[in-house]
Length: 365
Ligand code: SAH
Ligand code: SF4
Image (cartoon, rainbow, N blue to C red; front, side, top):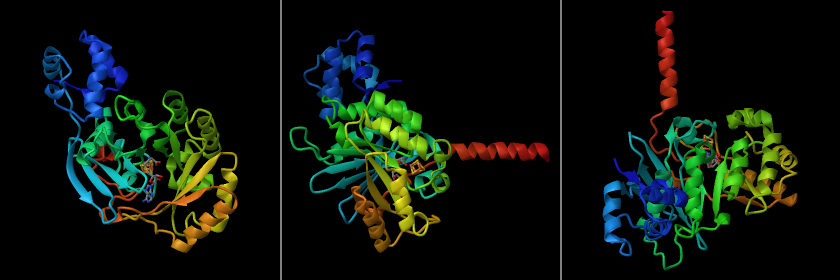
């Protein structure tokens, strides 16, 4: 079987080339062809010796995940569905705005963390995406959107806010991040690449050390009692630990604030008192708030907070001097809004759990 070169970041590719007796600058050239120019055909890499091209053809390939569907929303948002094999598919969303183009990328097929308001979480977990599958979403989106390396970037920002918990797939996420930042690949600014996490405290520290980028933390509740219920990982890393981790992160981060995401659930986490409690719990962290109107999905147990409630909640935060934005709900006509991404996930964890239960039942019968 051949090696997929999209699975390597710059160091990995140089190592692969070294193993085959090739110089580091050759690896850099191929990296540029693949990522900067979106080239997957070795024969088109014209400044590379024919013998090396032939060698690469026999050893390797450039294979991104394939696009199974491409849907347009009335507001310009575009959603791609990628085949990641074995009946699984993940989603990627492109959100054009006046001053930037943002690609929302997935990192796992499903998610094991099971937040109660999240469609991805409700589907269960299949597996981590590979580096090629994560960076391949950007590679393919650039190609389909007609990106021209000589012109202004169509995709200027990347957010790891699609399906999955990026910090639960740390190694592959970091390699993909490194490619996003590499001048020979996508050359994005660290400040324009954002990892969103539900709060895996020890891994936040690793990210700060190994590849600091902008950070968003999914808070969603102002106290541990409610957060334990909405974001179950809170039972392992409760709010005081999470706030301390945010401050440690900020010491190494490219931005001087953390963005706290807060999904607005009618009658659950959206009262005036809860806004004040939220200010108290986050007061030691330099932060901004991003309120996300809840996006319903089939079978979801919550309702979206009414617009006046969201406005009032935002006002309380802003009156205390904290920058607060409310996310525009975009792409909801094609189920591309936050938390609606469902893709296609064949849940392994629950199937395994069910199997264990079946076996148990058989034994005790
Ligand atoms: N796992 C990571 C990143 C993916 S989720 C995380 O949880 O941060 C991206 C964002 O969408 C998170 O803030 C998540 O809490 C939010 N989200 C999930 N389900 C949602 C829904 N139904 N409506 C609105 N936002 C949702
Ligand atoms: Fe996973 Fe994020 Fe969804 Fe929670 S909100 S289940 S961490 S994808």
